[in-house]
Image (cartoon, rainbow, N blue to C red; front, side, top):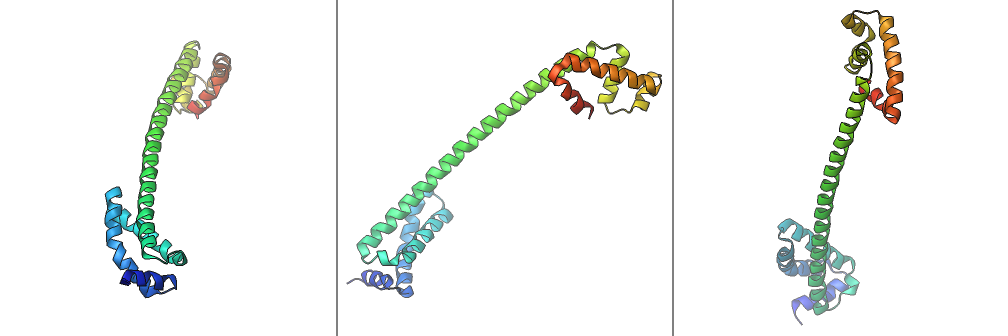
Length: 184
C-alpha cells in the first residue's frame, strides 16, 4: 500500500496529518494544472485551495486514492472552466454596458439639441424686450439686475416675464418644464 493510499484512508477517518500529506502531495501539481487554464498563479492557487477544502469537508466521500486523484483533477478543471466562462460573461456584459451607455449619451445629446432648438425658436417669437428678460433669467440674473440692464422698472420686468412664460408654455407644450430647469 502506497503512503498516499494510506493517507487517503486515514483522512477518511478524520486525520488532519493525513490530509496535510495529501495536500502537500497534490497542491503543486494541481496548481500547475489550473495554471494551464487560467494563466494566473494566484487564481490557480485559490482554485486548488477551494478544492482541497471541499476534500477535507467531504472526507467521508473519499476512501480510495484513485477516486481522490480523479476528483481533484476533475474538480480543478471544472472550477477553472467556470472561472473562464464567468470572465467571458463579465467581458461581454462590460462591452454591452459600454455600448448602451454610449448610445444613451448620444440619445441624450440628440434630445438636448432638439429641446434647445425648440426653446430657441420659441424665444425668437417673443418681443425683443421679453426675450431679453427671459434670457437674463436663464443666465441667473435677478429681476433687479435685469431691470438695471434694460433700464426699465422691476415691475415691468415682472410683467414681461409673466407674459413671456405664458407664451412659452403655449408654444412649447409639454417642454415648458425645460425652462424651469434652465432658469433654475
